[in-house]
Image (cartoon, rainbow, N blue to C red; front, side, top):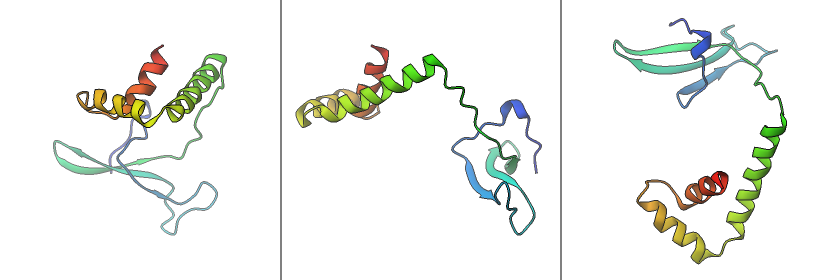
Length: 108
């Protein structure tokens, strides 16, 4: 099992399973989150410790969350033809019209 550097200990799409709970260990008496990664020498497992996410709730963060929720509400308020036009424009950028609309809204 590989040793994980705390600076690169990032939860990503390769998380495979979570063993145990913080106050209730699993039957194998192993706490942590395991993920499988592939490297030059093949596939190997990494064990990461449980952690509590940091959420400072600063003023800029709250403003960004508010803008994001407004963007979602405005997308839902669009007519089907307006959403279809975004879907057509986004086809050439290899993502959905929803993602195109939200990204343009957030940049405005």
